[in-house]
Length: 356
Image (cartoon, rainbow, N blue to C red):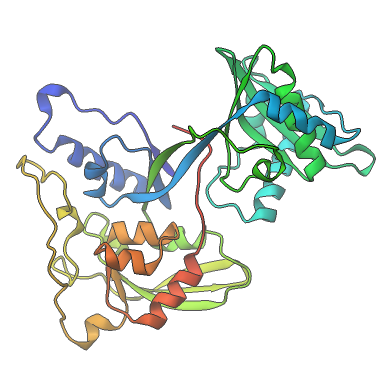
């Protein structure tokens, strides 16, 4: 994944399309580097939509009163987490990977063992582990303290008792740090274990995604092991022409492939150029409004597959339903059976727990 951050245009050069030129250069460079996808946290969604990014999911942050989480300690029984050290990097990575597979999580990054060793050596972070001795459950937690607030970046337990024991450690200093913030899956089991709901100031920071390489993007994505399906998607990607053409997506046993069955579309393909969705035309300084009229019917051949541009492809990859894509003007063509197949193939609830 090509992560994009710190995009900046000097004030003297603003309003002339420099940012759009910069972003198109980044797309080409990421393709050269072999990236399958790109993600970013947008400050200017219009700009990023103009080069094919679309909202995919959120980074959610939940806030709890520490005393409410401290009460979970009793559910942990005799489990006593211990302080972690750099030798626990492989254990932590293994627990995290197994948790992602078990719950079918879509989005969170899996840091390498070397990355965990770096973090475990960071004195600004606190880490505790349950290492599963004598057949007990495994788990770990990573958190920090600042301004009387505890911030949990990762907490994974194999059982309810493990989760409770780890939350109990975090909240044990509730008298000095009365607030706990945590970057969690919206379906994290703490919502089922805690005796109270999270405070209402739940914060969600939306992120955007773009598919850089269709074949790699599908091939590297996880799918439901219980879905066996095929569908055709016609892509018009003017900024990355290698993505353009008709692709057959096949999914079975949790894996997927995308195979090109027709060559790239012409520049004036049947879908409107998605660079014209409200964004800045390079060099013009004009704001453009999308064509609200119907996509022209060019005959039977143009209706053989669902048609999307890069924004529609990104949203589809992130699990947006076809009905929503059609309602937003990001998909056309195909029929009900195509929509049902694509919805089954790409269904997910994506989220991130990190910010960059």
